[in-house]
Figure (cartoon, rainbow, N blue to C red):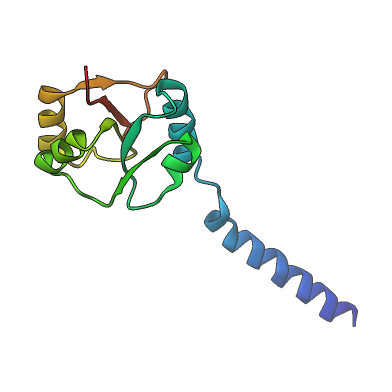
Amino acid sequence: HLLLAIVLVLYSVGAVYSASPFYIADRWPWELGRLLNSLTAPNDLIITESGGSPNILYYADRRGWMLSRTYDLAFIEQLVTAGARYYAALDTDDQPDFLRAMDARYERILPPREHSGWHIYRLVP
């Protein structure tokens, strides 16, 4: 019985150790959402590029649009016409043409500490 107990404990420890990387909390949506909450007014509408996840808007306590890999300046401008005031994305570094177009058209707001992949734009003057 002792040998069986030892084997089961070792198996359980190995399983927890193997699975633990999958349970690491992803803090970036929370951090970006809280930053947006401090930068924006309660009625501001936000466009988020977060793979379609509502987490950034949820943590920002703001309404808006959740995009899923949509890097189209014309579409962003349509949402600005519909009332969007800010654009925030977690990871758009692989879209340099889109970022250059956004930089040319809108004001970039950088977070207090620069996170690679974070982009925040004010869409209205």
